Figure 1: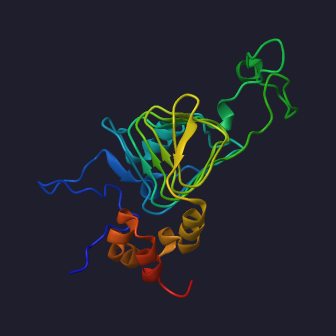
Figure 2: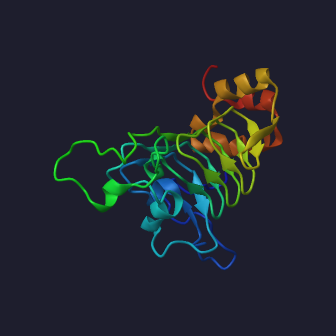
Length: 224
């Protein structure tokens, strides 16, 4: 019998043994309404102390990303975000190339739109690939580019570019190992199981989670 999988617009996709929904786990695509955040289908976040409302997840995950911020936070499909993960996006930055890093402009806004010397220019987007597991309490720094299939250790502080299928940990985070050899990484990116129809993904669960790349390739819908 096919396994039923909750649709990506489900707010609370985890059903507990008593039939109730786990309020601390959400599919992000169902709850994020922030104009500067995009989250792919089936990516979820969990918290032991969830926001009071589902809409509060944007502020929980990216508290410095405002509606008017120039940068974006982009999260791929099937990502897993543990309790306490925080994205420090570029709007949190201060200038630090002068004598002081104090943001005078935010306390005394100008009447015109001229750039203020105490504020930095627009910063880069923060981008997370597909099928990324971010461990408890990790901090993702402004402009980080986290590749597909990456595992981020608990408490890690991640900046810069993390290659596909790396395992990173520490402060600052560094690559501990690669999960697969380069040829296998290239094959997995070509297979791109995260883009398949959900029924095909669930049917291939054993190959995906068991690391059987040959079986996964054989199960791929269409011609690859």
